[in-house]
Every structure is written in C-alpha cells, then in structure tokens.
Length: 113
Image (cartoon, rainbow, N blue to C red; front, top):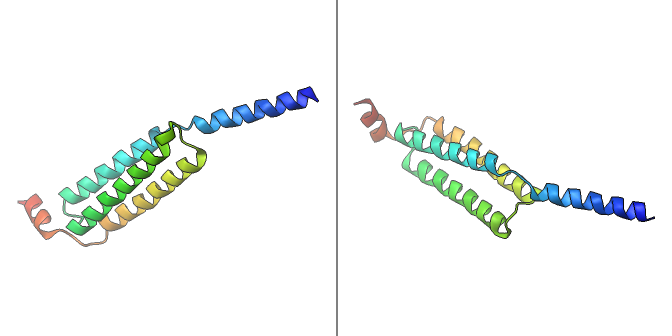
C-alpha cells in the first residue's frame, strides 16, 4: 500500500515539475520574428498603415497574454498552448496581410527612389 502511495506521489511530483518547466524561448523567438516581419512589411510598403497598426496591436495583446501568464512565475501547459495558438493565428494574419496586394503607395514609391 505504501509503495502505491509513494508511486502516486512521485508521479504527481514529476507531472507538476514538468508542467512548471515549460521553455518560453520559442515563444519569445516567434514574437521577435513576427515583429520583424511586420516591420519589414511596413518598410517595403506591403502593409498599409491600418494593417500595420492592427498587426502591432495584435502583437501587444499577445505580449499582454504572456505577461499575465507569467505573473505567478511559471507557465502552465494550457497557458503555453494558448499563447502559441495566438501566435499561430497572428503568423497567418501577418502573411495574409503582407501578400494581399494592398500596398502603401508612398512607401513603395519611396523605397524605389
């Protein structure tokens, strides 16, 4: 009986420490890459002012989501999945906006001259 109790406690401990040990580097790396793609699209005229503003606001919301999740000092699996899902959606939105053929005429002209 004691062996089962110890086994149960050890499984609970391993599960708890695994959940608390989520690596947030991929989240930060994805955030940086997305901000870079937004800035690049803004500079070369692929994004209109409104698209740029909306995409930057979306990145700010994702950063707030991460800050709220990290408030207690660790991220749970659910929080990591939620942030990654938001980043995944943002990545698709960035790609769609950069390739939707709406351009910032002034930036395109300025980049060429």
